[in-house]
Image 1: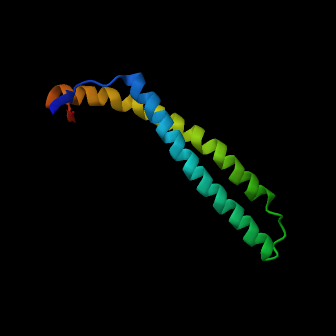
Image 2: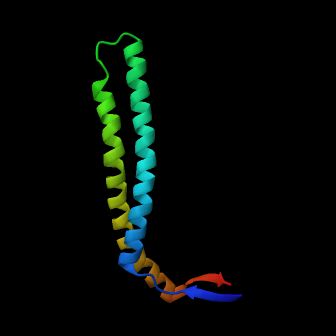
Image 3: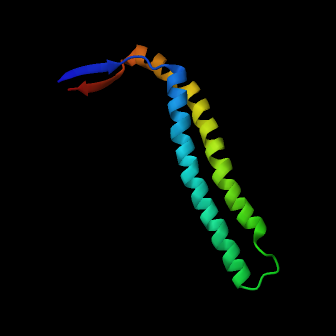
Length: 101
Protein backbone atom coordinates (compact mmCIF):
# COMPACT_ATOMS: atom_id res chain seq x y z
CA UNK A 1 0.00 0.00 0.00
CA UNK A 2 1.58 3.20 -1.19
CA UNK A 3 0.85 6.46 0.57
CA UNK A 4 0.53 9.35 -1.87
CA UNK A 5 0.03 13.02 -1.13
CA UNK A 6 -2.32 15.39 -2.94
CA UNK A 7 -0.20 18.54 -3.22
CA UNK A 8 -2.21 20.49 -5.80
CA UNK A 9 -5.82 20.57 -6.94
CA UNK A 10 -6.94 21.95 -10.31
CA UNK A 11 -9.06 25.04 -9.73
CA UNK A 12 -11.59 24.54 -12.54
CA UNK A 13 -11.70 20.79 -11.89
CA UNK A 14 -12.71 21.29 -8.25
CA UNK A 15 -15.15 24.05 -9.20
CA UNK A 16 -16.95 21.77 -11.69
CA UNK A 17 -17.15 18.88 -9.24
CA UNK A 18 -18.48 21.09 -6.44
CA UNK A 19 -21.00 22.68 -8.81
CA UNK A 20 -22.48 19.27 -9.60
CA UNK A 21 -22.43 18.09 -5.98
CA UNK A 22 -24.09 21.27 -4.76
CA UNK A 23 -26.64 21.18 -7.60
CA UNK A 24 -27.75 17.72 -6.41
CA UNK A 25 -27.90 19.06 -2.87
CA UNK A 26 -30.02 21.96 -4.14
CA UNK A 27 -32.31 19.51 -5.92
CA UNK A 28 -32.84 17.60 -2.68
CA UNK A 29 -33.49 20.78 -0.69
CA UNK A 30 -35.75 22.14 -3.45
CA UNK A 31 -37.76 18.91 -3.36
CA UNK A 32 -38.21 19.29 0.41
CA UNK A 33 -39.29 22.92 0.02
CA UNK A 34 -41.68 21.88 -2.73
CA UNK A 35 -43.14 19.14 -0.55
CA UNK A 36 -43.71 21.54 2.35
CA UNK A 37 -45.21 24.18 0.03
CA UNK A 38 -47.69 21.68 -1.39
CA UNK A 39 -48.53 20.39 2.10
CA UNK A 40 -49.04 23.97 3.28
CA UNK A 41 -51.34 24.70 0.33
CA UNK A 42 -53.32 21.54 1.02
CA UNK A 43 -53.66 22.32 4.71
CA UNK A 44 -54.63 25.92 3.91
CA UNK A 45 -57.35 24.90 1.50
CA UNK A 46 -58.61 22.19 3.86
CA UNK A 47 -58.94 24.73 6.65
CA UNK A 48 -61.17 26.90 4.49
CA UNK A 49 -58.72 29.67 3.65
CA UNK A 50 -59.76 32.05 0.87
CA UNK A 51 -56.69 31.46 -1.34
CA UNK A 52 -56.54 28.44 -3.60
CA UNK A 53 -52.90 27.68 -2.85
CA UNK A 54 -51.77 28.17 -6.44
CA UNK A 55 -49.04 30.58 -5.33
CA UNK A 56 -47.64 28.07 -2.85
CA UNK A 57 -47.66 25.30 -5.45
CA UNK A 58 -45.93 27.52 -7.99
CA UNK A 59 -43.34 28.44 -5.35
CA UNK A 60 -42.81 24.75 -4.65
CA UNK A 61 -42.38 23.89 -8.33
CA UNK A 62 -40.05 26.86 -8.76
CA UNK A 63 -37.92 25.69 -5.83
CA UNK A 64 -37.09 22.46 -7.68
CA UNK A 65 -35.71 24.55 -10.55
CA UNK A 66 -34.20 27.55 -8.74
CA UNK A 67 -32.50 25.79 -5.83
CA UNK A 68 -30.27 23.46 -7.92
CA UNK A 69 -29.18 26.35 -10.14
CA UNK A 70 -28.48 28.60 -7.15
CA UNK A 71 -26.64 25.91 -5.19
CA UNK A 72 -24.70 24.84 -8.30
CA UNK A 73 -23.48 28.40 -8.85
CA UNK A 74 -22.50 28.70 -5.20
CA UNK A 75 -20.62 25.40 -5.41
CA UNK A 76 -18.73 26.56 -8.50
CA UNK A 77 -17.71 29.83 -6.85
CA UNK A 78 -16.79 27.95 -3.68
CA UNK A 79 -14.54 25.64 -5.70
CA UNK A 80 -12.89 28.64 -7.37
CA UNK A 81 -12.10 30.02 -3.92
CA UNK A 82 -11.16 26.80 -2.10
CA UNK A 83 -8.80 25.22 -4.63
CA UNK A 84 -6.21 28.04 -4.57
CA UNK A 85 -6.48 28.16 -0.78
CA UNK A 86 -5.85 24.42 -0.59
CA UNK A 87 -2.91 24.71 -2.97
CA UNK A 88 -1.40 27.47 -0.83
CA UNK A 89 -1.89 25.59 2.43
CA UNK A 90 -0.63 22.31 0.92
CA UNK A 91 2.66 24.03 0.01
CA UNK A 92 3.13 25.10 3.62
CA UNK A 93 1.94 22.10 5.63
CA UNK A 94 1.89 19.33 3.05
CA UNK A 95 -0.99 17.78 1.16
CA UNK A 96 -3.62 15.28 2.18
CA UNK A 97 -2.19 11.78 2.46
CA UNK A 98 -4.10 9.09 0.58
CA UNK A 99 -3.35 5.38 0.79
CA UNK A 100 -3.60 3.71 -2.62
CA UNK A 101 -3.69 -0.03 -3.17
